[in-house]
Image: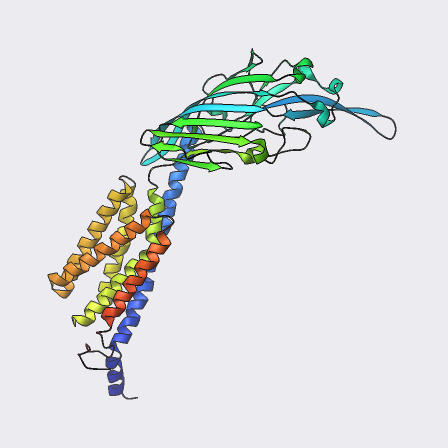
Length: 446
């Protein structure tokens, strides 16, 4: 093929070649998007590190477990040589009824530009243990070490204890001590030795205790009662209820705070009311409330970066069509500059949202990006009408993406419909283009 033929071929395939170049540039511009996603992850990790640092100085998440009544007993084992060995073991008993009422008082702690929700709470805990049937556990009464009986409770972070907690057991006061003699059930907690007689085994044993504790972000409870009833009120307006059980009814949530109530039966758990030996991970059944931050700007920014390919592809595609329809040549470097502006939008959004509400940050970043690209389009095509139309289309696109960011369950459906409509519009207007280099004329077929 001679030089003239090559030139004629390249001239005939000019739009195809330019389209391939534009497609390559779209893929090339995804590289900055990957760096931006890493930047968002890094800032989000930094926020979590600051949250852990604040929690280490305040108190971490708290889970209240208990109370559990523990009674040591002895077990004698005779070996084949008639030698008898006495072992000390423990029997565990859970309350028949457990009621917890608490008021959660939230606070916001600041460190640099980061914020974390912490709280203080007063828990009123009461209930009773039913008659203790040791025969069901095959333990003889004479083997029970009644003088060593104790009640234990679990708490994740002792730094959150503000006042000395006390236990009222059968109208008699006792003081809790740090640590637990037996850690098979509760690893981290307090215990209080209680006076328990053989007569007390046949009648209900009541208890009351009050806890003044503080923690960070989450407060949870373990349903140790045969019937566990928990009621929590707070002025926090963005709660998230999590764990193994949800509130029994729709919680009251308004601009004054929330009120949540849980009721859990022993049949809803996977451990009994009393047992000996063996281990049960009773904290797996925990439930509670998390104090969510009103806006997680990092999560929304990360979601918006995932739409970068949509922004770049549609913007480059529109430039490509305008280049053909307006019969003006747009240099690949100009495409790259526009792509860089679209990428910088995300860094603007990330940085501004660390100081302002996400909606405000999105508006500022989008307005700045649209204005810059509109002015640049005017300098390329020398027509305000074209630049204004381009700016309006970008505004619609940024608005569409913002709506998707606000949606949760319906984001995929709305996004798919929107993309289908955009593709249909593109196909409709591209029908006027002759891909051999000229605009189609009425009545002309290629």
